[in-house]
Amino acid sequence: MVDIVMATYNGAKYVEEQLRSFCRQTYADWRCIVHDDGSTDGTQDILRAWAQQDKRIVFIEDGIQHLGPAKHFLHILQYSDAPWVMWSDQDDVWFDHKIATMLQAGTNASFTGAGVVYANAELWSETEGVIAHRNTLFYPTSLRDTLFLNSGIQGASALFNSSMRDILRTPLSSYAMHDHVLLLAGLTMGKVVYLNEALMYYRQHDNNVTGHAPGSRIKKVQLMWANRHVPVVSREHYDGLAAFYRQYKQKLNAEDRQLIETFLMLPEQSWRKRLRTIRQAHFTLLGSEYLLWIKLCIRRYI
Image 1 (cartoon, rainbow, N blue to C red):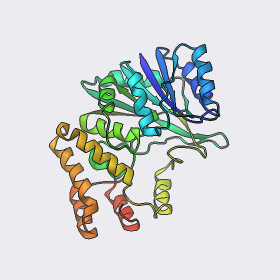
Image 2: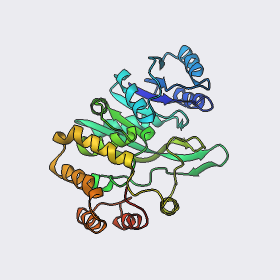
Image 3: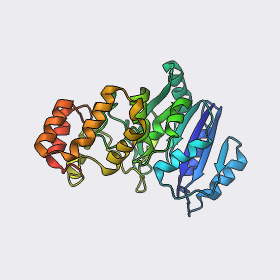
Image 4: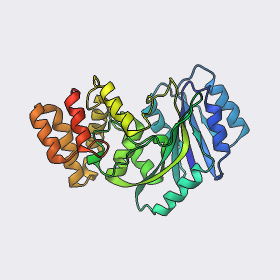
């Protein structure tokens, strides 16, 4: 059994196509738990109609709205009780074998505690078709490769188990995004498995919550220069990491604890000392210390 946790907000234009992709899945033992964040465009009427047609679609109407993406996804987790959980955006389209493929990977991983499997996605738009065959271009394996990303791995590409869901249900004082917390928890308190196969269309349009994905490493570097007015470290992700650390400090191993503490003290250091600390800690950006140094030289820090 897999719970598909879907958060919606003004998604009337797209949500039915995503729901249809669930119904085409080769693995049929799923339940879609969907919750709306206060749409004004008819999304809720669409969800009610689908819930009446297919008992696997459960539309939660609990009166709680306007949470924002991170808290919205985490709020819906309280209604999930299946052994496996997948997050879904309202505007993507899943390939027919997505659940079956990811569930097989999760089963093969034989998680003994909290675990998460990440797949990939094709970037797609209605006007251009497939823009790129891979959305996720880098798979971090440690905090050293993660803390300067200002993101997690795409949440809609993840499948995680009930032990991970229990961790995510613990409220934090600050969030950047739900997938940021998932990746941090996976790398520090669980196991992360990467499946480098595109299993859905990640729709690109003007209303993407997380903006447009670059689609290639070269475009990521170009974007780094184009957005040089943006700080190296996002305040939202810095605060989210600090909240994660405060909550789980005692559960982290000594190395991860030290890496986070080192990262959190960087804004207080002089430019010269900060560079020395980053070099000594071997932090990377997209797996490269060189790329991180470029970013540090062309942008303000935070």
